[in-house]
Length: 370
Ligand code: NDP
Ligand code: GDR
Image (cartoon, rainbow, N blue to C red):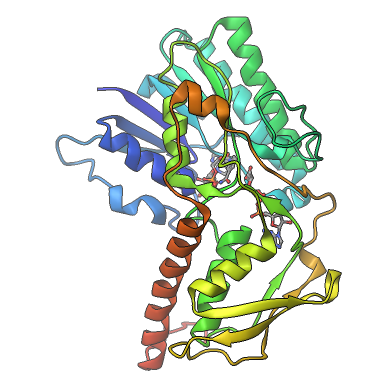
């Protein structure tokens, strides 16, 4: 039985990758952070009682900023594959917490590589590093490939650039099997609520159900190459199954404006929105509504711009060239953007329909401080 160790197991990709590896027959170890509330929602359905026999999934407390604990966990688990997905992954938040981001997202990668080297596991353990299209930052060329120069535009991107190069350096210096997956944006119903796609699909669902009036957005002109996380975790695994370790771009090759993602999401909920105005004065107005939508009326303003969500330096355009992954890994995404948006909007409609039903039935969470 192969053994995998996943950092960032409680995140979006960690959840999909765990499910994928368990199906392949792996024993999966995951590192979760201690938090004051439960933070394992995304993987609770995979939980196995450690008192049972035949357990093949186990969580360990840890943090990428603590090498002592990484060395101990790697020593205890002796993984064949490490997937380093843990990171402070929000670009805008990295402007607020730049030093922490550098520590977790940059030096954290070094800690993993060094732990494997110090423990004498360089020939046994293969390492996947979660690199990112944010490395490209300010546009140098399109589409962006493995050969495109980097120009990161945020503390997150800069920290990830260190992670990228230290992975390449350890591969070359110590002959380690270590790969960078340069993944473009990938989303799902499990996406964190403050990333743009999930913020939109949650907002659209609430607006359609009459639970929210408006969606306040940042830069509507940004363009992203969006794929589905389920497809992308398969690419991570494929990278670690090759004869030689290499770096790969994982993307769909299609780019879309934030504004168009919003229109698509509203359309799934039965609401046609048209955009008017420019810059901070741009708004999205309801043009038509299908008869079963109760929450909105034609002519209502449902999208507005709030400059609070603008970034000090923005990445305007991302579009990836997945040719190498297609030819060498045989990787091909199963989802396109329309399938992704539909899955996300329907999942959020279901989520908030349940919440609304409870509220309408008079259910109220008791607040001990009231
Ligand atoms: P999420 O934000 O959903 O998950 C991040 C995970 O990292 C969470 O489990 C989080 O724990 C954990 N984490 C955060 N800080 C630390 C730390 N100091 N020590 C240990 N664990 C930590 O991200 P995604 O699943 O979307 O992304 C996975 C990885 O891929 C990240 O490294 C991200 O930067 C990278 N990436 C993501 C892309 C995307 O579009 N999704 C594209 C390209 C790269 P907790 O749950 O406790 O917060
Ligand atoms: P990104 O994702 O920065 O590409 O990083 P995000 O979804 O946060 O932003 C995408 C684009 O949308 C614009 N935008 C907004 N973004 C957010 N979050 N909220 C808004 O209200 C809003 N309005 C417009 C942003 O300015 C940006 O241009 C993600 C993360 O998962 C990283 O960890 C990963 O490395 C990259 O994708 C690839």
